[in-house]
Structure formats: C-alpha cells, structure tokens
Length: 124
Image (cartoon, rainbow, N blue to C red):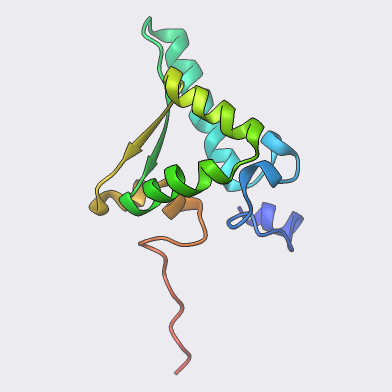
C-alpha cells in the first residue's frame, strides 16, 4: 500500500469509484488487489472442486445499503448492467454482515471510512 501511495501521491483511491482508477482492472491499489485475490481464490477453488465457487463481497449493514441503493445505481450503464447480471447469475454474492463483524466489511477495510477507522489524537 505504501508503494502505491508513493507512485500515485495525489490519487485518492479510497474515494474514487473503482472504474475510474488508473489502469482499470489492473490498477495496483489495495482495493483492486483485494478483488484480484478474491478472483484468484475463486479460480483455485473452481479448479479443485466440482461445485463452482463465487466471489463474495461482504458489507456491514450500513455499507450494504449504500452499495445496493447508491453505488450500483450511480455506476455507468455498462457497469451497472454487468453488475446486475453477475448478481442475478450468482457469479458475485453480496453478503450482509452484522455490525460486530464490520472488520470484514469491504468498505470499512478499503473505503474512506468505517466503524474501525481510527482518528488521530490531538497533540498534547
């Protein structure tokens, strides 16, 4: 993550939608790296087992509502349609976590804020 921030010092990857990142799906930011790891894990499970595995996005209740009600509708038409098709086919699963599990939430981990975001203490 430090390497990415050194290479792209002015790029706010946490607050920029994924489709606007430099390099598209090959963007070296932590958000895209996490998605690539999920996809590679899914491919490995598919090769070993007979039953297909799915990419699962996990969200705390707040971010689940934001993703379903705000993020997907705000996507450009092409990405919105592809996302809705992937959700219908079950290629992508969206799981709603409990508040106690928010450390597993995709946006809490990689977004601009979250339940476990630490604020700096003021100087003494």
